[in-house]
Image (cartoon, rainbow, N blue to C red):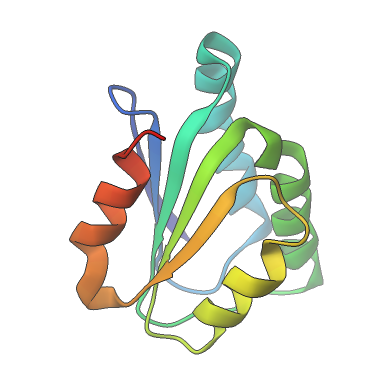
Length: 122
């Protein structure tokens, strides 16, 4: 299950995985993000806050995650990964080769810095 909120004033989608990622989680994220993207042209960013990476419920969930990234990355300027998981730094380095969004990893204690970074305009 994912908790999420869309800050329409700043164009930021805040996401908090609560447990293993499920296939339906990404359909719900798309329902929240797509109308905003259609109306404004894109999101300033996504801020993902999770102390540890919860993993996926199964291969279907992992595939849904990758489809969401494929379908949305060109409409998102920044992605902040707020996690103490070792995968945070790996994800930052790996994903930067496949998506157009700027990706940055922050430790959990750096949540405020992550929010500020996403809100800062170039």
